[in-house]
Image 1 (tube, one colour):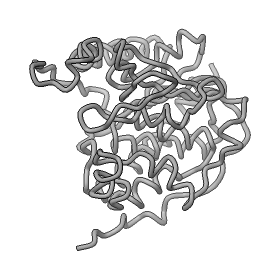
Image 2 (tube, rainbow, N blue to C red; image 1 turned 90 degrees about the vertical axis):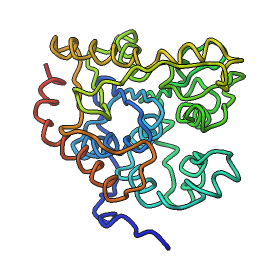
Image 3 (cartoon, rainbow, N blue to C red; image 1 turned 180 degrees about the vertical axis):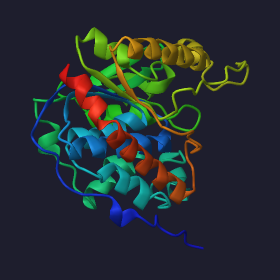
Image 4 (cartoon, rainbow, N blue to C red; image 1 turned 135 degrees about the horizontal axis):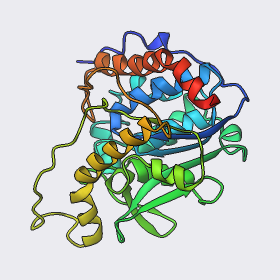
Length: 300
């Protein structure tokens, strides 16, 4: 039986962001379909002429961040809410062609035939875009930047390729997977680059922390990549540490962190399309609710 489309798909706004450039760096957490929260927030930013000069994203954050960098309001949401049940994207055909339940080539390449990606605006040199992936040989984060990386689309694909369910992606001779394995929220990169205004969009509520579990490597598919495996099994504890550090920096006024105002119950590949749509609007409305606070942070 065919699944019903998202009931409010036509309410998602279209349009192009203004040419106004906002000083600072936008940092985007991943989380697969929880990234719809960030996509809603970024649409609200664009509608309010807040177009950061630098965007750095991990996994779903990199995927959504591309459309923010290209200034295309609503595009990220339309691909995810409009094609969640297209088997070319997620499902049987994806398994057959990409050997993964999620075929990232659909939203990176195929969807351009449905809603063209603004390549000219995306590649404009007046804004930076960085996708974070994890080098499977070293276990370290790789920061691939448009204009410096030969194929930024491939880097974004690597950033969003989840361990255990996706194949490694070769980016400039480096076998890579999900950036979240090594760097879930890359605010430190933004600080190291000298940005004075750093806005982080999380996809989990402020209080959320990961449960740190024991891992057993005997049958692990990454036992031939020991550095990657070490990083992978320590990533949950590192995430909790990162969240605590960001809270302190937020108190000191060094970061502005936007996070869901209520508990996020969406899973990474959730099938409840209405729930996914509600998360998009939560991100959109949470951002609007804190818009005055955000503008004050950016102006001071």
